[in-house]
Length: 82
Image 1: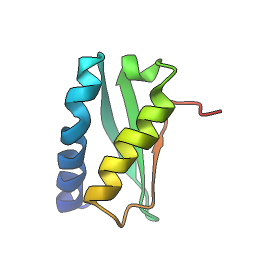
Image 2: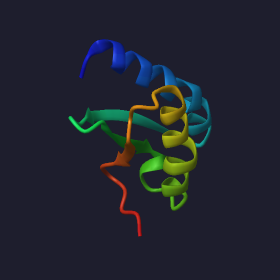
Image 3: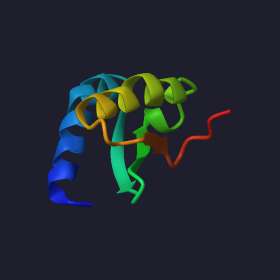
Image 4: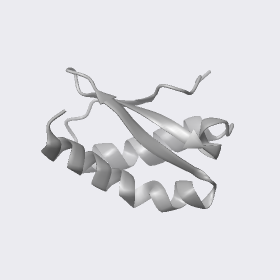
């Protein structure tokens, strides 16, 4: 992943990290695929919280797509979304 894009992603994640950290969680970039799907890992309490799928879509993905519209989707590699 190019460093400029990684910096934009980290900056976007930094806007929501305080909310995740308040609940004992965080998020980590795993990879950005060639088709611009961002894969992340929800860590700490976010990895096991039943609300993590909502946090992923309404919080993380929203912040990322607002900052970097070319990203097509955000997926958490460690969540099973039913």
